[in-house]
Image 1 (cartoon, rainbow, N blue to C red):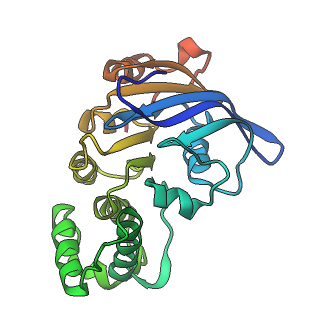
Image 2 (image 1 turned 90 degrees about the vertical axis):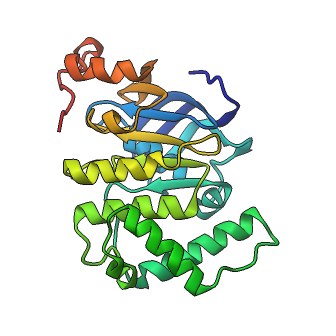
Image 3 (image 1 turned 60 degrees about the horizontal axis):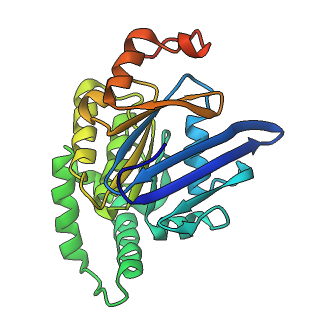
Length: 262
């Protein structure tokens, strides 16, 4: 899986286990700067495991292989160290952070990120940050009152997914791992979330979209599509591959499950 751009993420022969069960079985993947990759596959193929492993989830143990991000080996780094390098994970099931307002959480995360990027960075005033946050929330059609709520507390599933994309737009990572961000969204919310991701597109932003649904890729057209079966990437191609999977499912890979359309 080579890239025409300079490599940003390089994963080689990655084997990952959860407990005694091996989930990833020799996965290799290269993501270049400015590229959008989609990873598709049936349930249980290891898609979410890959995202969690790259972000450093302690439940997943790397038994073999390597992963480098922007030239730095990341497998021995803590999750916060990976985030400071420019990795970002949008969760499939975002959790609540009671007692921490969304505005305070994002302001603190923004300042930490900016300080890592530029030691001379001058802290943005709370008033100016509130203005930037309000503008981003308006684009995502989020109720501005949510900024004063605890993170995700009382949010619907769709609102939680919008909040993840809000974080993405505020923090502007180099590589976003979008773990089934589209699950549970109606068409209108899906379009809004997709617009939030598409606004980020450019030479300094890359993403890996993990999805079980072909419909998301109608709104975020990927540069590369990969099929993951039983812990390995078995085929790669362009956006047309997603359309083929929509019609044919995974039967050619020995899997009976068809692709979910909605």
